Picture 1 (spheres, rainbow, N blue to C red):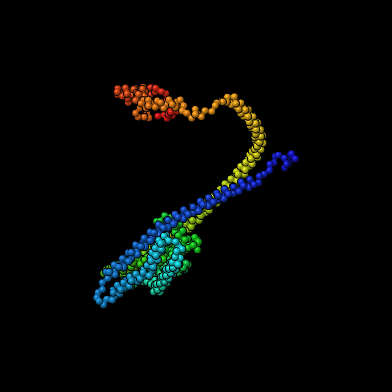
Picture 2: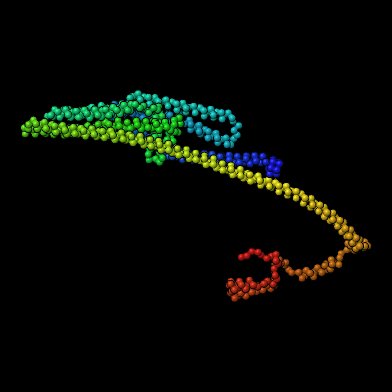
Length: 574
């Protein structure tokens, strides 16, 4: 049993105290977790407010731009209508426009009266009622509040009906505009690029082969651009007009992306954040894929617009060269007729001209190939740029995830260190507490013994004091008995005046004659002049030295005639 459980080496564990300490540490850990959560929420709220502030700047600028555009359009329409003047009375179109303008103004005014004024009247009524409620009790007129609620619900229903009616009119107008088929007038009319200039067809060329070569060059140019245009159209037809989305979402996507231009700081992140807010049901990857498809569609449309322009440019250049060639051919033929050149010379000239034309055609084909290669490279660069941006976003997200993981690892290590330190501290405290408990028991027993001894001593002293007090009272009583006065009763002598009182009343008049006229509560002139400090100060003043350092030193060493009391001495030092 030397090292067993019953030995003095093992002390009983205080489980309740340990549980309390563990609960305190657990609460401290929960508090730290709550602080971390609050810090994260605050950081998230700060980031969200910063992003919303940047969005607000972008959209406020767009709102101002739209307001200015609306005002400019209205001013232009009014100015246009005012500038139009009818030619005569029968010019009904002008009067119809003016009547239509008046009709629109009347409709706008009626819409304002039916839509806006009820809201303003309801607001004024509510403000008036709230002002009355501040001076009255709410329970005074409960039926009035039910009427107000019914009126508010009626105005809400009226506004909902108006908004639904406006949405229906908007959809009808949109379907009507689509049904007019105006898109075919807005698209390029240069789909058919096969067009031989009249200058070449109707030219009076003395060399039919040269004319055929020029026509063939025009055909080749048109066929090349026609095939390129057709391939672009097929590529555009393979994708949906709205890139796989509905029309409303696609137009909303286009407008949002167009608002965040490249000159705005951090435009890419702001644009993606706004798109995620507008389309909460779509992921970031879907938005990026839709943007890639839309970029490809825009690039194809830009190529479609550029192909007719390039064809027109090359056609004009070819026409200019053909005219120059025809003019040269005419001059050559005239020279041939004039100089009677032989047939061989004519063939050489035709061969030379044909070679020049073939050379120029080869140059044109090379230029077209280079332009196609440049366009392909631009498309590849655009795709690579988008891919780099996606990779950059993915790398940023990976870095953020790694930072979060490192943060959690640090928190885990910190918790482990804190737990180990707490365990060590708990063991040390347990040992110290056990030692302190032993010492406390010893001290308590010692204190109890001391208190018992002191109590006994106090009781002995109290008995001794009571005994001494009884002896003292006995001695005093004996003394009183020894010195007691024994006198006869004399009431007249006891009630009569004393000799001192009689003398005082006899000398009252003499005392009143010697009494001064007024009573003073200060020093007399004799007492003041008897002070040597006053006489020295008066002498120094007469000599004109009372403000000198000498006078201050002399006055500081002169003692008063009567030393002051020690209780009136000041402890302040100046």
